[in-house]
Image 1 (cartoon, rainbow, N blue to C red):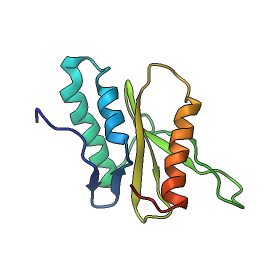
Image 2: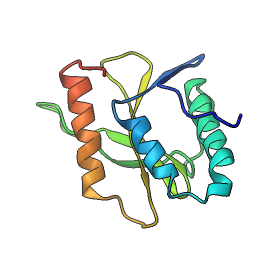
Image 3: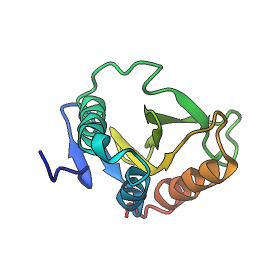
Length: 139
């Protein structure tokens, strides 16, 4: 498993999980901040989490919490939430698509050594969400 890295997409028994454009690049950049001795096992762990999600397995609130609000559609009263694949200190922000059936999109990854959700991460998820959910641009 020496050269394993997350794939563009995962087709599980319940969901398809797709990395947005630039998400794998952000993972590589984020991984560079993880201790070199932990990178291989860390990547295996992230891949396992994505595979569990794609197979519809139960995800704990600790490892897959709701993190922030997605943009509202016109006339929508309450904002839907996006989640985060959490493997300390890395986070992968994602949402369940309304446009593409049974599909999660991973927006991007960040190295997070702070507590609060940063506005720039909410904006980045929102921009990817708009591009995909409103404009139909999957890649």
